[in-house]
Image (tube, one colour):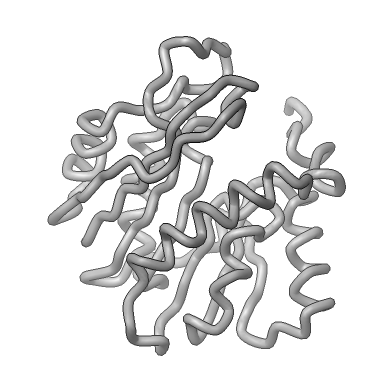
Length: 195
């Protein structure tokens, strides 16, 4: 199996630009979170937890999940160092159906060749009337990389969400940044979908 590049990056992942972008995404996500704090959040493809760890006071339980063991180790260290009692890490294949009330997926879909299949999987992890929040890049024709999507149109993402079974999907661009996507200027959207 090919080495997971994110394992190599994990210890040095949290640079100033990534932290700033994560804070921007978290601020937008916060606007869409349920008022009821008696809920479970999965931060799927959590990386080092830069976004999900900002919501420890918003949820009864937080589950951080990533395919990179290195990233999960960093999140575990942060949970322990911060003495966060309502958070845990779990491998993506250990997540249970109907387990989450809210799932956050930030800058993950662009790395997933079969992103529509992932959206279907995330649908099964949500409770009835659960909410999926996807933050990712808008389609950007000036970017090409054989292993990364160059973003998504709102129509593409809306179709993928509705096809997966979501009742509704609202998508809007919320951020424009310089050199944030493969060193190019780019914009980001937040998709909010309800099961």
